[in-house]
Image 1 (cartoon, rainbow, N blue to C red):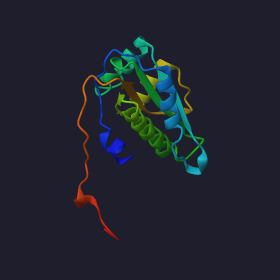
Image 2: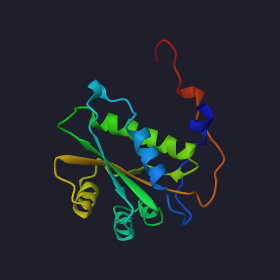
Image 3: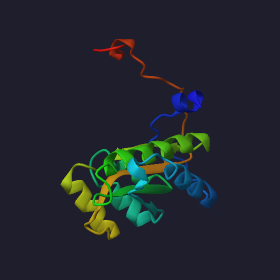
Image 4: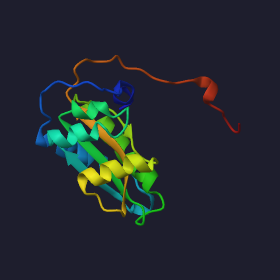
Amino acid sequence: MLDLIIKRRSIRKYTDEPVSDADINSLLEAAMAAPSANNKQPWQFIVVRNEDFRRRLAKTHRWSRMCAGAPVVFVVCGEEKRSDHWIEDTSAATENLLLAAVGLDLGAVWVAVYPKFQRESHVRSLLGIPEKIRVLCLVPVGHPAKTKPPGTKYDKSRVHYDGY
């Protein structure tokens, strides 16, 4: 498992090969296996395969352009009224999705939407998301156009034992 975690890298370029329905389902199962406060599971997911929608998602902000080239984009949403911890819970689900992508030899990247109102409005308007649902992030997924070596950001100067 540690190898899988270290192998996870942000992948922004993909081949034209589609992501199978079985892989999409596996990614969603992994995402929904995440822990959630009081088991509220406030997450909702929108699977975007439509090319026009993916191109329009790519215009969410200047760092979302890779959505256009990914065969599928997961829009990770949360029900704010269902849990005070919707951000933490949907973040855990997103990380599970990212790790599962590595396990399936897929590439993915976390594209932040929350907390910028303009970004949420753009995605909400495009996909018909109700106002009560918040948009945490976009996760473009595809077969990597190139591989990146495993890496870690471990920095022992940021670790403190028994106090700061």
